[in-house]
Image 1 (cartoon, helix red, strand yellow):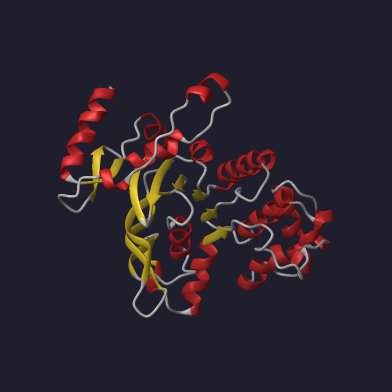
Image 2 (cartoon, rainbow, N blue to C red):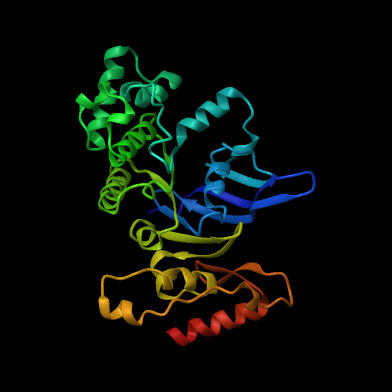
Length: 312
C-alpha cells in the first residue's frame, strides 16, 4: 500500500430536512484520507451515517458542506456532464442489497455492459460480449449466465454480478456499501475473498462499509468508527483492535463473538453511555499517537495517552 492520497474528505456534512424546522445531521463534519491501494473500513451501527458518507463521496447526494477531493480535484465542483462521466468511470459502488440493485427486466449481459455502453468502451457487439464473458469469469460465474435474469440467481451470485458491473469500466476506487450484509454467512467469506483477489489483480482502492467489525478487520488496512454522524476513532486495523480508546469502539469490539464456548460464557459486554464523556469543552478529532485519531476533549486526550502508555 502506498502513502499517496487518492481521496481526501474534509469536514463533510450531509444534513437532511425532515420538516419545516427539523434537520437530521446524518454526517456531521467528518474528515479522513484514503490512500491508493488500501482498503479503508468504515464501521458503526445502523443509522450512524456510514452509507450516507459513501453516497456523498460518489455524488449520489450533493454534500451540505465540506470537500471531497479525489485525485486532487473536488468532486462536488464537477458540474459538466463530461466531467461527471469521467469521474463516474473512476469511482464505482457495490450496493448493499443484491436483490434491489439489479434491474429485474434486464439480462445479466445488459446489466454488466451498461457501463461499457455509457462510456463507449466496446468497439462492437463482439467486443462487448467478450468483455462481459471475461467479467463473469473474473467473479466466478460463467458465460452461460449472461442471458439469464437476476431472479434466476442466488444472493451471492447476484452480488458477484454487481461486482462485475462495477468492474466493467476499469475503476480505480470502489465503495462497497455493506456488500455482504444481505448474504448467508457461508457466502460472505467467498465474496470478501473475491474482493481481496480483485484488489490485488486490478490495483483497486476500496472503501468497505459494514457494521460487522470482525469482517472489517479481515479486509481493511485502516478502520474509521462512526457514531451518530461523527467519526469517533480512526486507526490501523490491528492498532484499533489491540488498543481501542473511544468507549463506543470498545463497546463494538466487546460485542464480537468468538468460536470459544469458555470465552463466550465469561464474555463481558461493554455498553456505551454517551453521558459519561467530559462536557467541559467541544470534542475535537485528535491524533493520540501517530495514525491513531480519537474524537475527544483535552482532558480525555490526556487520559487516552496515559492509557496507551499503560498498555505498552
